Length: 255
Image: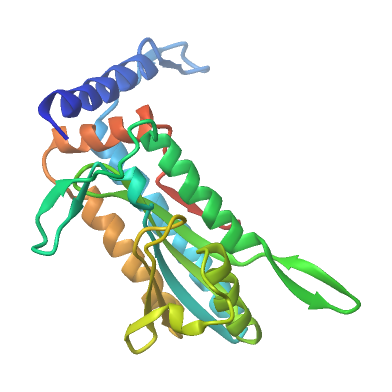
């Protein structure tokens, strides 16, 4: 991202923040005293992160107290080639991507990631005799970006043990892979698989955990790294990127 593009995001974030808090006052009904709201951008980001910690902690506690036999899956979804203006060559250096489609916006990539996530989380059908019904899994999802501000997705999904193998086949279907050939996912470590790239996904990963809290902590580590990133201007840059491209970077199941 060039300096002009970076400044555009920073200016957009600052303008939106200033407009949102302009002329907002609180009136004390007992005394009639009117006080102006004092807004601190950095403090508000800390509050956002504290809220994420609180909500994920509540979800983990709920899952642990349910006494269900669960497998936890950590999923990384990357967009296919055509969304990336630059790709890495064999020497891990970035070069222009001849397959890049400049008409595919950041928001379009974000929507594609969300669509795939909804299919993963909600579209698997399980047998509840005598019918097959869609089964919804609890999840935590985070949208991050690479060095060129192209979005990608991290998610933790909690799957009942009885549905684990079916869920893996379902995942391959969403990824556009042959569901009958489990070898299409390359196991790079015990319980960790790599899929793609193809027309549906970029190189994406699946990792299995029995420990619910550990999988969520990996996700929170990524969020914490983003929240602690750089200077105040870096935080305005990230905030502007999210707002201008209508990105919600954190979502989770209802508790």
